[in-house]
Image 1 (cartoon, rainbow, N blue to C red):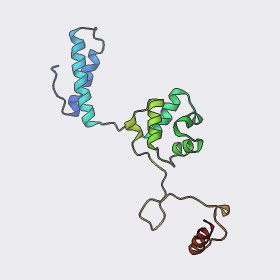
Image 2: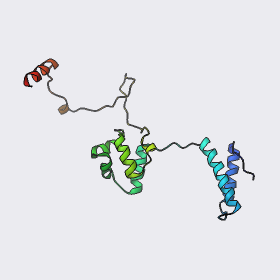
Image 3: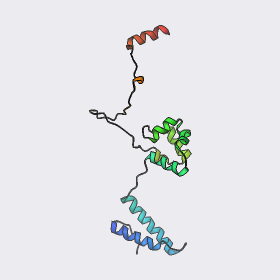
Image 4: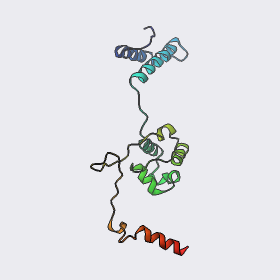
Length: 160
């Protein structure tokens, strides 16, 4: 088979079959050189026709954790707080630049993967076209009474 630029799916299938026949080539042989050339041709076609998106940053972090056998608590040194680790892994917080730098240098995750937009949990309120993060408040989170802004300003001015 003569090497040429692969342009169709049929040519791609034929090239893959040819590459398979060359897989047992002896090192330094003409067949090995041909295997390398055909592999490059197949790779070029696949990159153009079947591109693979980089992984989601959170999935990349989870994958690396699994590879290294570490737990979420071990990520505190990269994200500075256990709550931040939990929020990031549960897609409720975005990675900050310092987190990205620390994860890149500490875990070896490519920076171009970490800077991608993760899939966040976003809820839309009815009637509002923009994204809104919703947080449920309990009774203890809501102040009982609120002073008017004018009274607060007067009190601050007299105490300084």
